[in-house]
Length: 312
Ligand code: TXA
Ligand code: MG
Image (tube, rainbow, N blue to C red):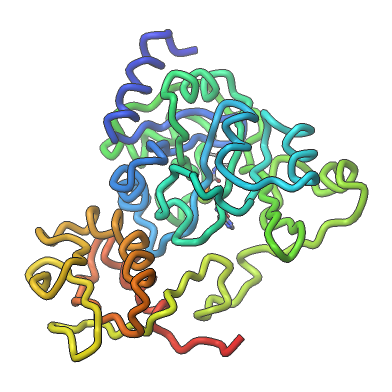
C-alpha cells in the first residue's frame, strides 16, 4: 500500500490538472479531474485514442454518484447492490453535472462508478472531485493489472503511478445503461450478467458497443449539433457561424484554440458546438484542424457531426 503522503500528492496532482494512474479492483485507471476540460483532453492524448469514446467518472460514495445523474429506481437498486464494485452505470446527466462534456463525448449521458479498491477510494476522497479514468493502457494495448504494466507504456505521460498491487478482478467493469430505451448491458465485465438480472428481477438486453456498426448516426456516443457543419472552411459564408482554430480564428467569437493547441481544442470542442447550437444558427463552418495527435479524434468527431443525418 502506498503511504498516505503518496495519496495526498496524487490528489494534489489531480487537482492541478495532471494525470495520475491508480489501481482499482478491475484494472489500473488513467485518472484526471473530471471537471477540468483540458485534463480530460490530456487523457485522450496520453492514450492515443483516434476517437473520443466517453469515459467513466469515478466517485467515492452513493451521494456523489446520485448527484451527477438521474438514476431510476432500478439503477439505484444496482448501485446499492454492487457499489463499491466492478459496475458502471450510464444515466442521463444531471442539469448541474460539473463533469466535462468531453468525458461524455458530447452526449447528455454519463457513466459513473464507485470502485472498491481501498487506494482508489482514498484517492477519490482526498481529491474531492470526480475523477475520469479509462483503463491505463495506450489505445489498442491490453488493460493493465499491475503498476508495472502501466509504467511500461505510460510512465512519461503521468505525474504518478500509485502502486496498489495486482488488480483482483482483472477485467473492466460491467457497463449498464439506463437511458430512455431501458436497461442495457453495454459491456460484459466484473459483475456477471446473471447477478445483474437477479437484482433487476428480469432479463437485461445485451448490446455491446463493438457489435454496433461504426457509421455516423449509429454509434451510441454519436453527437450531432442541430446545425449543419461545413468542414475545412478557411472563412465563413453568408449565414454561417464560424468555429475557428489556430490561424483561422479571426471570424467570430468561437475558437477551438487561437494558438493552435490541439489539447485546448479537444477540451473545448463539445462545449463550443453546444454553445453555437444554442444560438439557433443553422450552419456552422469549421476551420481546418490538423490530423496529428488529438487532431485525429477531433476530425473523427467533426466528420461524424457533419455527415448526413437520418431523418429520424
Ligand atoms: O473497470 C473499469 O471500468 C475501468 C477502471 C479504470 O475503472 N475503466 C474503464 O474505462 O474501463 P474505459 O474508458 O476503458 O471504458 C469505458 C467504457 C467504454 O466501453 C465506453 O464506451 C463506456 O464505458 N461508456 C462511458 N460513458 C458512456 C456513455 N455516456 N454512454 C455509453 N457508454 C459509455
Ligand atoms: Mg479500456
